[in-house]
Length: 496
Image (tube, rainbow, N blue to C red):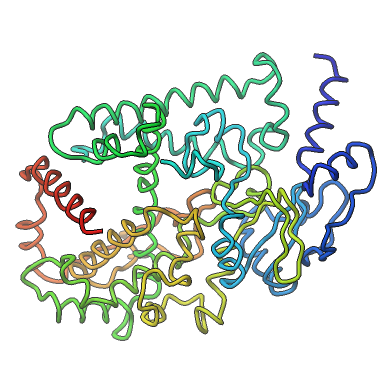
């Protein structure tokens, strides 16, 4: 291909990336004319001054962007408008603004930005997290830990995160480049290889689930009305991605709980001691905590909510969102007005969770502190403020109840069994312990603590005996357990 056609393609790409305010605006831009102002003439939301072409991109730091944008929100307000190399980005920094747009107007703000590599080439449009909000979207146990299926799942997760990284693929910033022939578009071959890896994983797991004895969720989904119009691959992707969603987030949440125990949970007045007093009163020391104890253990649930928002498990970078890496960002195809500000069509709209969870009007004073007590004021898990960590509106995390349930029982049993956690020893000769910090974390799709050592000490000999007697599940009849789960699920659905 000669240079001239490539320049033409890039010119078309630039027009494609500019915020759209209607077909007339696009035609005027292509003709070199100034775009007409919005019909309601509402001003754009405030934001830092932008440069031609690059906009605000040069002002975004490479790391800890959410802290930078949190500081900006104090200067420019809860709704900020940024221009990121031609892409309009609207940042929401308070619970009121995020709920007002992404939840109450969710019919308009439930789309996703286009992602060519990870959304179209790697997953063929079948990743529910990346799908556009359309009619198609609306319609539808391991023994060793070293199984090939688990290793493949971990690789799929890693590749999904990698292919969505900002700047990884030019085609995400200039989607028109995907029209190039395969010989000039090496990302197409890579995308197909990764698609086959993920397809084989998900279809293989679906087939094994359908072949296994007893009830399971594969059979439940296969028999559902929503599955009748799905191909095998689409059904397999929907099931597989639900499983993928919990592959890292549940583990990371527990990592952050351990960090909180070490950095904020100690002492007679710390949250660990308070939780253990409740556990001793409700559960005692002759059995493990169970879900039946939950109504009498509201403080354990409060610790779970504090953990979710302690260092948000999925904290996205606004710069990454505007450059094609916004897996959990929202987008609007129509222009809108909110709080007197104009929001252009084609904008990426994103809640800055870090700023939202530091909104003192909602979360109280000292929002950076790990204080489970603040969550006792929310009697319902569906309170908007308590759901911030799971997203907003119609794209809220569908597994949030499973996540809360798992976090409750894991937190209850961890604190029932172990004393206040301590940093692990890094030097046996001096006794020096690992320095654990609640801000020492990785950045990316999943924000997790950097590796650290921790010391777990049983609260007494009684713990060892009960764990040995009640926690060995290798002899359980899993088919019988699944059949019981299926009966309970059918009974629950029948009552609705």
